[in-house]
Amino acid sequence: MRAQQSPPAGRVRGANEHGRISNDHYAAHFGSGHRFHVTRGDYEHRRFRYGGYAFGFVDPWPIGWGYSDDVYVEYADGGYYMYNRIQPGVRISINIL
Image (tube, rainbow, N blue to C red; front, side, top):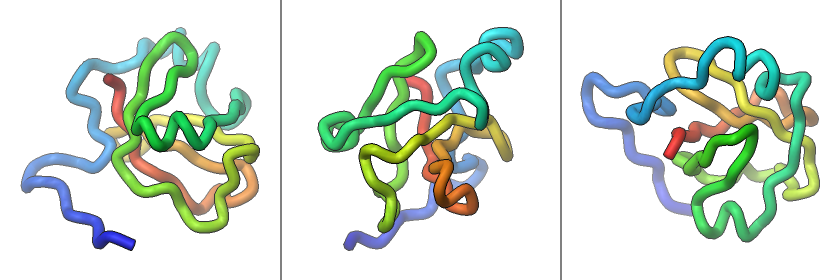
């Protein structure tokens, strides 16, 4: 397993440099009530599409997460993160592409 590098000073992990999802669209498509699955291929290509947006993975896939697990995207701490319904305390940083 590769060591994770810290983001450059002044940047927040998961901070979106390409805009932000509007509040109305976010409420209709994102958050813990809107679950979906990503595939191993999505992760290997370092990107996935959901809710009308393309996202890129920043962090490694967590140990214990399966590709058939329900996941969801939330905006928190100034960035977008993917959470797993089974392990809600673990999140991975993602960016809008």
